[in-house]
Figure 1 (cartoon, rainbow, N blue to C red):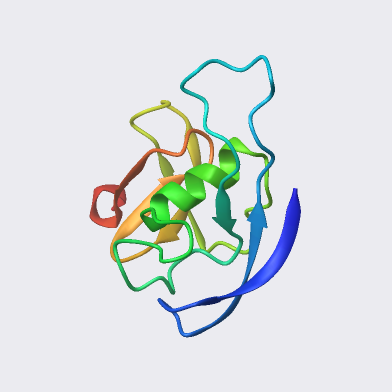
Figure 2 (cartoon, helix red, strand yellow):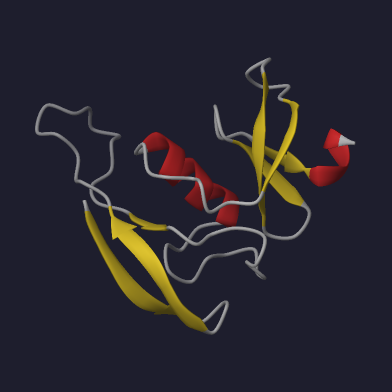
Length: 113
């Protein structure tokens, strides 16, 4: 994996991104190749689509989890995840959304109150 800096038009500054490893040669057909994952995704994301990775901020968090990348920079809250059934930490992403740091499921913040 390669970490680099690039300009994000969504937050109007340079951000750290990682180019994830491509799919293994023996991977199934539905496995994608390399992906961009923003290491600075989080509550500061203002839109519903990340201009860097062409995905919702919650999808960026899911990419970080799936590739085992650090999530320390994310603003977190603790709550119960309906999808995985665990009491876990959630990363606050975008406007009024939180992603489970165990399974990547995203839901509105209000559902955590």
